[in-house]
Image 1: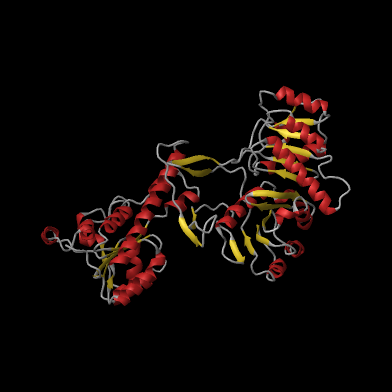
Image 2: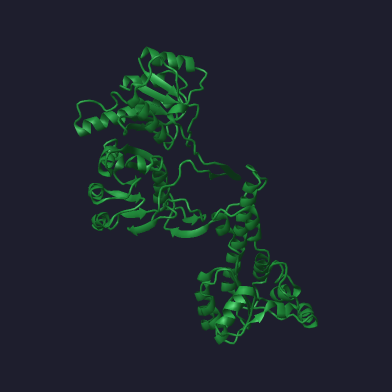
Length: 531
């Protein structure tokens, strides 16, 4: 037996939770003489629209029962979906048991993911786990040689176009495509259920982990032109690049999305209620972060940390973009700007730079919210909790003879939040609520300390400053100083206070060096490695 190319649609079973486009689809099928079979609310909607429809219970001889839990789980339904039409034994069984072929299955599942997202209780979530739907989808998908299966409302139009082109039949290639999409949907559904149940049961490390995403965009290439890439979203409502509205500019690239996410997650560390903040990112590392009395001031201060690296960077704001700040941003080449909003005048300013992408969100991501991150390695995945650690002044332990001043304490907390988002080994010099030097991704912590100080000297020269901005600054280190050399390098650059996790075997030596240099130093007891 060979699989037929074109299979005519004579009988369709429709059972959908999302009624979008249902009546138009049913009407088009009915117009082609297709017999419609349906269940519950779907049948009612079709009937109310004036079209004939047979209830599944009429086919099975059993009523819907147990609050709708049992309605399609019957040989008449599954036999109609699974039977090989050209197999004599299957055909005989269909005749003997009164099973009619079902050529088209249209199903979308109970809204389990949406129910969980609304914060429903355990019992409600359980009741929104679809059983009959996935069973029918898998049956129809397996038998795609003879059956078309549609699980997404966006496929209604292509299906009808195929029926028009095929004079009422669907080609094999399309049935294959629809089946693959259907299996992916049930896999994603099961992943959502298993993840929710593990969380509900408090299983931090379940035996199996499943992850699923929905294609948001296919990209021209990945990190490099020879790499294929695509962007998938997981359905989360966390404000950010995945949920943002793009107002102008070209499609986002792989690197754009990666860097924009890093920028927005960083700037979200600074609550807008406490004042404006701006982060400028290049290659997923901040090249400048600052707060200010206005968004414009915060942007200028962030930009002056490293003007060279800011060219072609990503700008993230913790407050809605205004025209004055927009006019300053367009003075240099910027890839992406992301903010909680943008007023009309700001958007008008940006319209003169059509290649500049502007993204707005409905808010800031919560830096303290729980979540997970995934990273692929050869043969597996590393899964961990999102780094949602935050430090308050009350958590700090002063370990030096000199106590930090109030301004130094505020700057240390600022620098600590920035260091959390800098690739390790991370060193951040900050002064008066702005970064003045950042060292990232070095194999040696003392090298990061030196690089950050050198960048500050370079910017002082470029800006014509009389003093290097690291004079009177504070330093944040994402992990402990293993030796005193990093502390001494910071002191040579003019730093007056340091914030670090502590916990080194040589903490005593590091503290002694800080005391000798007249520095104040605090321990957080928490580190922020970011590889």
